Image 1 (cartoon, rainbow, N blue to C red):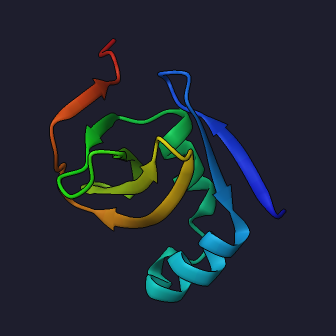
Image 2: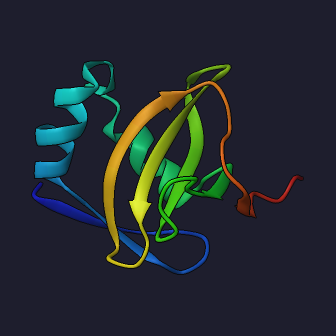
Length: 103
């Protein structure tokens, strides 16, 4: 797999490249090894999408994580349509752009 295009709930296409996953994310966050499916799902079916506090073009996709209270956080540049990084997080951060409807 070299790259995968993922569609978020707002209709944006976000691309996750292998070189980003292996060359940046897993390299800088070794605890993310084996978590790629969780990261992809955070874009496809997020709990929340928040505005980045450091870049107006970026959003943080918070998705379900491997165990509570840990969530998956994926940072993507929505202008260029690429994933920049991903990590585990125990808290939400940034102004909410979109939130998963509650049942």
